[in-house]
Every structure is written in C-alpha cells, then in structure tokens.
Length: 609
Ligand SMILES: Cc1cc2nc3c(=O)[nH]c(=O)nc-3n(C[C@H](O)[C@H](O)[C@H](O)COP(=O)(O)O)c2cc1C
Ligand code: SF4
Ligand code: FES
Image (cartoon, rainbow, N blue to C red; front, side, top):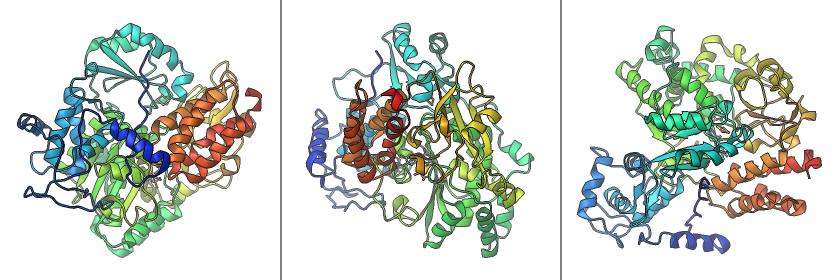
C-alpha cells in the first residue's frame, strides 16, 4: 500500500490560542529527537542579538544559540551544499534541495549544521524543511527512505484514468526497495494517469511503462526537445519589443505600453483576473526599490497551461517578464517554479544562461527558485514567504504585496501566462487580443482540458466560450462511450457544474452566481460513468493535505469535511455549516474556495445522495 502524504504540521504560532495553540505545542513536541531551541540567531561576532521578526525584511528573530550544537565534522560536511561566496538565509530551500538531491533525504544532524552556517535557529530550519512535501527529514537513528521514489498522481483526472489501480499494482511490481508515494496533480493531466520516477515523468502510466522507466535507471529530467531556444526566438524577431522599449525608456513610452495592455483588457491569468496594466501602474507608483516575482507554481489540480507554454517557447514569457520589469522599474526578478517541473527547470536554466551570454539589453539579476511540493506556495504572499526562505504561509492583508511584498519591498507578482502574452499584444495591437472574446467577453484564454474528452490538452479559445463549445470545437467531442455529466470549470477549487449548465460563458466573474469560478481555466470533464461525490471528496482531501495550517477554519475544516464526506451518508446540514465557516473565516483563497466542489455536489447532484 502506497504511503499517504503526511498532513502538514500545524503552525508554531506562539500567539495562537485554543485548538491552534494545542496543535502548535504538539507539532513542536514532534521535533522529539531534534532538541531544537526556540528561534535564535547568532550575531557576526558571536554575541547574542535580538532581531524583531519583521515580516518581509528577511530578518529573523534571534538570541544566543542554545540546544543542540553542530559538530565540527558536520560543519565541514555541509559546506559543499552552500554557495561559494555569501550564504543567504533566503536561499535556505535551495540548500535543502541540494542536500535532498544528493543524499536522498535530510539528515537531522546536517540541518543543525546548516542552521549554524546560516545563523538561523535549528527550529526554524526544521520548520521549513518539514513544511514542504518534497523533503524527507530523517532523525538520528531513523532509517532513510529508499533511494528511489515513484510519485503517482492521485488527483481528479488521474483518478478518472485509473490511478488507484496503478498505485495498488505498482508496489508489488517494483518491490520494497522503491517507495511509491501518492501525490496531488503533477501538471500533466492531459496525459493521465501520470507517475514520476525520480524526476522523470511517465505519461499514460501503466505498470509496464513505470517498471521500464525504473529499469532504464536514468531518473533525471532533460530539457524538452520541442522548445524554441534563444537563437530560434531571436531569429523569429523575438526581443524586438524589449529592445524598442530600452531604446527610449521614457515616461511616454511606458504610458503607451501600459495603455496597450489596458486596451487589450489583458487580465492576470493565475486565477484572480486582476487587470495587468492596472497592476503595473499600482506597483510603479510605490517608491522603489521594487522587486518582481513570477509565479510558475501551477499546483491547481487540472492546470498545466504554464508548463505547456514554458516548455515550447520560454523566451516569449521571458521577454514579457523583462518588459514588465523595465516598465515597473524593478531591481531584481525571482522566478518561482514548481519542483514537479524538472524538465522545465533544466530548460529555463539553459535558456537563462543563453540570454545572459548575449542579452538584448542590460538585464536585471534573475534568480530561479525551486518550489518543494506545496500547493499553497502558488498563493502570492505564500510564494513570497517561500522565496524568503520560510514556510509558505499566506500573509494577512493589508498590506498588499504591491506595496509591501518580497523583503518588505513593493512587488510585482505575475502568473507566467499573463507575461507570455505581452510581446504578442505589443506586436499585434490591443484589438487583436481584446477582440477575441465571445458572449460579450474579451481576450483569449488557455484552457487546460482533461478528463472524458477525445483530445485533452491546452486549447486556446475565446474568453466566454461555453464548455459545450469548448468540447465540440476544440476537444474533438466527448470520449467514446461517455456523455457529459458535469465539469470543473476552474480546477479543484472552482466548483463543479452540471451538464444542464454547459452553455455558461467561461470567464472571470460569470460563474459566481452558480457557486463557481474559472480561476486558471482548468476544465475537468466528467461523464455519466463518473461519481461527482467521489470527485468532490478527492478535491476536499487535496485541500486538507495542502492546507498550510495557519488558520483553524481551513486546517480543521478541510480535514473534518473530508472525514464526513467519506461516510456513506453525508450529514448535509453539518457539512453546510463547515462550508460557511471555511468560506467566512479562512485567511486565504485555499480555505475560502475549499467548500466549492462540496457545495456544488450537494446542490446540483442530489440524485447521488
Ligand atoms: C491557494 C492558491 C493557489 C494559487 N496558485 C497559483 C499558481 O499556482 N499560479 C499562479 O499564477 N497563481 C496562483 N494563485 C493566484 C495568485 O495568488 C495570484 O493571484 C496570481 O499569481 C497573480 O498573478 P496574475 O495577476 O498574473 O494572475 C493562487 C491563489 C491561491 C489562493
Ligand atoms: S486558509 Fe488554509 S491555506 Fe490559507 S492561510 Fe488559512 S490554513 Fe493556510
Ligand atoms: S497530473 Fe494527475 S490530475 Fe493532473
């Protein structure tokens, strides 16, 4: 039986009261064997220092180091995993990756040495390492996990394609020397079911394909061969919009560019749909220095459009990113890429090197950061915490990150696809993009379609298209033998609509009255052979596993709802009470949206209960 992924540890928030405080203490007790002191940091000269924990400042609370000390041997062992020059606490997750990649796990004693080298408390390093699913903490005396892990996606589209049977058969097929792990969506839903052997994705996974991949023995991921490289992009006229901007980067030019994006009605495509041009004006109006963060976390089950574009034409997005950086005048760019996209990471590393070697203009520093298996890090403020080297826990707002974001600075944050369209809109004009909608909507949307259709994949279609039109015109119709029963219009969190509502325009705002939203435009199609309540349960288990634990309504609510939904009889009044609480009192979109699929299942599919 494959192991279930551990539920995220509760926040160790010292000001918490009630159940939060109890859970916090329990999670600290769970550090048993680590003997960690509370948050401490040593000053340069070895004397104790009191740093107020200033959110966004990158600084951490600290007094004199107590508790377990690193041995000289461990301090020596940790050195190769650190940077040659300056070691930065904000790069903690990168250092943890290096250790995990090399050793296959994170030994406790090395983390103590890492903490000492970074002048962080060991508790802080533990908190971060234990927050992210892709790190395996191993205490002294514990047995490390097997050298090879196969991650099998258990989210909705893979579930429809037989992931459960695959998981059940795989352990026997590969033996005890390999770990099989259930994981949420790995962003390849059109090729479901999917397994990842080491970092190598096996699409359309069967026991045979996975065991062959294991036997082949090379588990590393290579850059996708179909990608257009730097030279190819330049030969096709790429980077000319950036060059034009750099030739005369005056206020008039900047206003012209923002005006085009506003007229094109380009909206943020990461889920919230905030107008891009307006966001640029807002961030630009805050006093510098400013920073930029690009969101390629793409963890919403059913979504794979960002990977699709990144793996085909990375420089289109990079040009859009550099135009945004120049217009908003940012000092440094951070690209946050989910860890599951190992091929795309190899590609981006290669293409950033080419770009730096022959840049079309002076480039700002660009840092590529690697997520570590935490859906919540797609939420913009959680992502910022993660880039700062902390647990990915959303911040309370206000202040908004446009004013007080990364390291306390005004921050422009964008989804990859929002930037991807910028060069083409500047090339072809605002009307080209704005004129593309249907049913009074404007623009193009990249729908990640998966489930029971003939041609799943990323389909570029007018905003406002209905699911019926999307399936018929872009997906080749329903899969053979399947009749449309329901669809998720916006991934796991966007709710579930019945076939009777297959005419609704898919776009921002239009689905709210029906208890749904389009979000990142991940459409998962269910048929008469599927159980909606089973898929709603799948979604709730995902939220329970990915809740960061910061606030009680979400942490307890998602877990409790998943428990209740696993029963044969649903206690619908109690579930509705829980939904209301999660929606009203959760800090961020995860907890607020978690009730959507559950409520839709009860409202639109009463025959299943
Ligand atoms: C739980 C949660 C997960 C999110 N995941 C992502 C993500 O993976 N990628 C993304 O671009 N935005 C994600 N978002 C939305 C971001 O918070 C933010 O609105 C978006 O990145 C802004 O960029 P845009 O204006 O270009 O859309 C998520 C939001 C929530 C609440
Ligand atoms: S709603 Fe959930 S994910 Fe968001 S901050 Fe609260 S506990 Fe974390
Ligand atoms: S890859 Fe399995 S659901 Fe997305």
